[in-house]
Amino acid sequence: MKKNPDYPKWKLFLDLGTRNLELDENESAINVLSKSISIKQDNYLSFYYRAIAQHRMKNYLLAIEDLKKSLELKKDFYSYIQIGISYNNTYQYNCALKNYNFAYKLFCKNSKIKNSNQLFFHRGITLYELKKYQHSIYDFNKAIKLGFDGFDVFQNRGFGYLRLKKFDNALLDFKESIKRNPDNINLLKCYEQLGLINIKLNNFNEVIKYAKEGLLLSFKHYWDKKKKLTNAELEHINKAWLLFLGFANIKLNNYEKAEYWLDKVNFLYINNLDIRPCEALCRAFTLSKLGKYDEALYYFRWFLNFKKYGNLFLPEIEELIDELPVEMKTIIRIKFQYKFNN
Image (cartoon, rainbow, N blue to C red; front, side, top):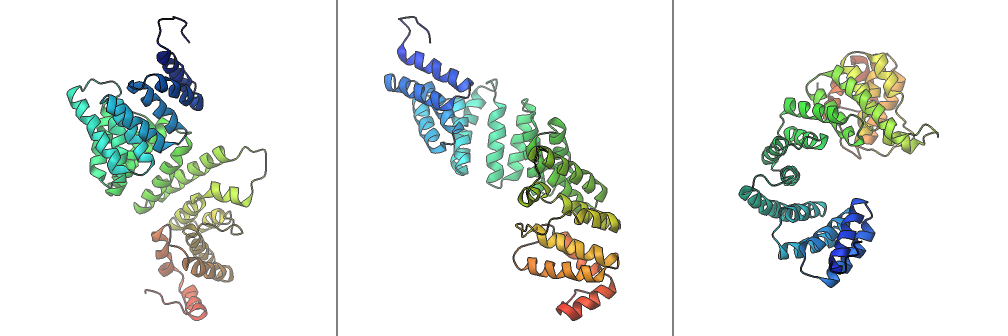
């Protein structure tokens, strides 16, 4: 703290609060900023900084209240952005958009305002949540143009393109996102989407490539190699990667490799009723192609049971049913009274 006797006490607490914020000591920041506010209640920065600390501690409603008070005292560009972010975290997207638009009006008056790219990035996220995908892409484009070039802006724009079924654009953005921060755990979403998009585009070698990279990144972040993983931990790490690897190899007619990857699926721990029917059908198909009909029937029964409780994560996989060998179809018709499409 400054020791100048002429220095206002409220300002001393404000300076200490901002310093605590820089040190990520958010609870201490709230305490001293509250003292600043109790002395002087008409300084918007005290409410603004306390709101940031509240937001970091996930006290989003308290953050919103502080930001409302801050904005009553001054119509500030950064306060509008921060309250928009807090509204986003409480799923109040229309309220968030309203405040981002107020910030945009200030931007139009002063386009040189510092860190203005934050406005377009966060408004882009809100527009995406409101299913205004094309408008969200416009904002992400603007954020990038203004210098926001982190992996997350490309990732979010990729999801926008994906919703508009612009798969080539989405592929480029997800790849760019990975390129900018290849070891970030949040990029697992990019690897997953690259797998899904390439399945739709029938680029199965690409599916294998990104599934392996996603699997390695999952192990890197979730396994410290000092302990044996439980079934639940293995399930969390493997997610859909083994399914991608199995299905891609099926489509490439590499049935032995498909069996290798699908054998790594842990069927003792079953908690994903969207992925499990896909895995079971892939195993049934692979085993039937390898002439292992008894095992194939075992997993086809699993597929039928799983399908009662969940939707297929990959609808393309259900097409395998009609591609089963004739002998297998005959057995399934008799044993399960199953009716094929052709």
